[in-house]
Length: 298
View 1 (cartoon, rainbow, N blue to C red):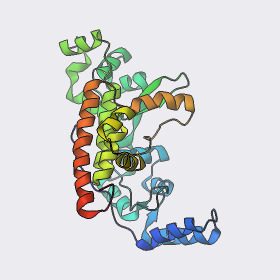
View 2 (view 1 turned 30 degrees about the horizontal axis):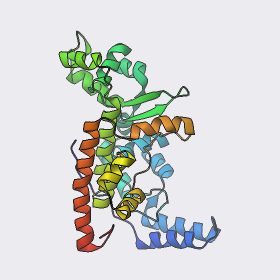
View 3 (view 1 turned 90 degrees about the horizontal axis):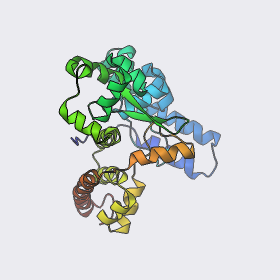
View 4 (view 1 turned 180 degrees about the horizontal axis):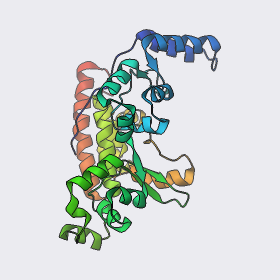
């Protein structure tokens, strides 16, 4: 998996962040004066919430969330911990300029759910599509858990169309030998391929060494994190910096329990890969702390 770091935007004003801190330190929930001051500072700094940013780009909230997940829209300067992400007008102007139109942007983030809908985009039957996906040729971008607690994978429509144009031979005829072996072994690479994509997207959204280590730790089973990171203080830092569940993660406990299993590496070789990557990331994070003292144990 390619891990290309892309530092988040850092534009914004200290005035805005200071207003946010003061508003929450006052101890008065939603105090009118504090809320007004925060809104005014954000407006002056060209910052806005996700709902407004989505509207300005002509996207629904779900489409906007997918654009953020994919790195098409970058979040603005980080505010107080626990506050919702903000977006700069400069960033929205950049996206509009790059995409050309709201329709083009919506096409990039359009998803289809389940084998039947995805197969229709490819022009094949659901069984062939399922085989292609289980064998790792098509990588999900997200998931839903239906009322029967079954995972429904989501795919980017544009990627399906690109695959159909690029690999027409895969859409007809017999499966290649390697696919037949995977089918015989009842393999399903969808969860692993989705985790690989998910981690890659998260890593590209930060250049901070401790945050990168936290991303890698978040994908490992707890026992493996304890073995890889024996220092309890470091584990606390990694836990505090762990990314939130991905967009679409269910809130209902029964469904969330099913989805939680998708968030952890499973096969031994996959676990080993992430453990090695975490060790490497921690080496860089510890080096940063020793040299700058900016974040994490020293």
